Image (cartoon, rainbow, N blue to C red; front, side, top):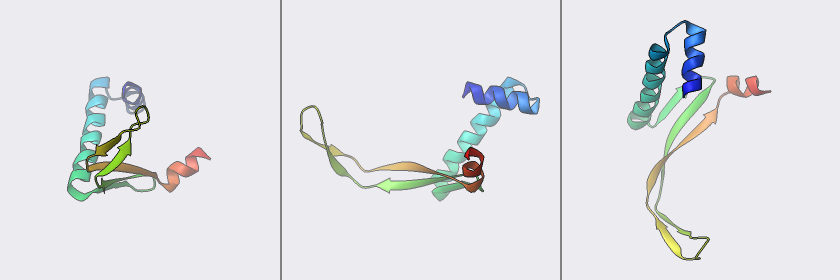
Length: 88
């Protein structure tokens, strides 16, 4: 996070403290959006989607024992066209 804060401060002329608050507000906005709507889209850049994974079982590779895995929510991230294009 430090590198991003420093980059934003340099690019915008904000102080590092202000840039840090901006990054924290961005993070909070993503989390709140996922809680409320289950999806946050930064058009053309990234899409965050909350998905529910049902309870399942897994195997401990060391002992071979079966281990229950509780149901949980996970977040998937999909790159948008602008990000994909920028990488090529």
